Length: 568
Image 1 (cartoon, rainbow, N blue to C red):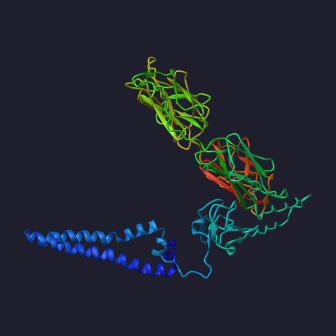
Image 2: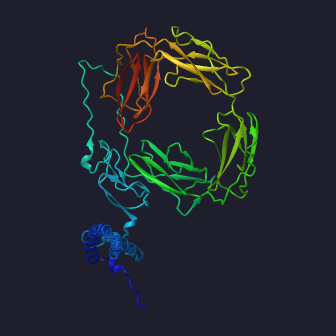
Image 3: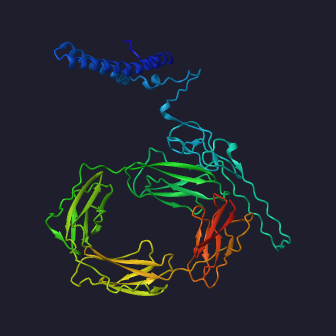
């Protein structure tokens, strides 16, 4: 039997001819229907003038049908070519002339990264080049390599911005020349210069298990790397943020890690990545997926007419079969969580204890297992309402309180009220330690700091009513300036274990709050303030990716920062 193949449709010559035909059809599908619509409009006008003209009505119908058919011709062609398996995208958008040696690899298995981007490990999407690397772009196989592709380290002593495309985008770091002093102090024993920490040309997880092996909860996998023992830089193990199904235990030298499967995931794979010396390697591990259930039901949800009070307990049971080994979750109602939930040891039942009288008089509890869900709606006795609530002894606004002062506030909430009583601090100016009484009808406030603002409110809420008390607190004194007096020269580089003590010119008469604030992005120090906080000792705890870090002191509405150079 002689077979017929449509492969010749995908030849370049045929594509070029059909590309021209497509362009003509695109013009015709727009111009011709517009012309037919214009002519139809004229026919309708004639029909209005001469209603007896039956021929005109037939012309209108024929032209409308013709316009619709012409407009749909490209769609019909697309559907036909898709059924026949012809590369319709290649025809509509012809490529440049083929090279003498066409690539045999299917394009669906590769991805082309433009300059300034690279392909992460086991990924199919290009991302922007990271700092201190450059990315020349190229075509790579999707999601099969355990190392990033197209990512090249600039080298020790070079830096680059994110998105660098070539080595010339890497800038050599210039070490500033120390400014000589007039009379340098001789040192008895100068510190030896630390040996620069080496970079690595590559990093690999040497025993990544085969993707044909599937792991179950409780099983352990130990991964080892080829990082040499002479490497003294930082080594990190990074879990999969989306599918973190492991408890990770890292060895003392960080060159290996033991993973314990802690759950059955919705997704059946998870990655673990090791990063060291500017290089990375990832391992893709398959984990047994949760089995599916056809349905899940709470079998004894109480009747909605029954109302529960605080302290009462309800046990809910499910029909989850005993042979189901997947994860079972009990979830409270986020909006009206009025229960303390205690699941059974096998998770197939849960005991709910009512812990408060809600504003809303119902609450739901949900069970989730095997991709199925069931919800139970439970009626809870609603809080009684009060007509009014007052704080009866709010201090006068002319009375100013200092740190350490205490004030007790009382309310007129009757002893017969059994609902919930809440004391809420001022979210903007919370300057108090709040201690409610055992029955909640009074509260003791202790001033714990001098605020930037001179007032703070405390509010009591009960029975749908509220009352607030505005309290005046002695404001922090302001300083004209604050300075760190002995910030080290930026030409001095510090190594892990080195300590630096910084002093300030904050006067001893200043009684306000003093804060030392680390650098959020490059916090490379252990900070130990002195007892009066007018000085601080910094201990370098790691070699950073960046070569500097700042420490800031804040007092009396003023601030001063010190930039410290840390050996990279």
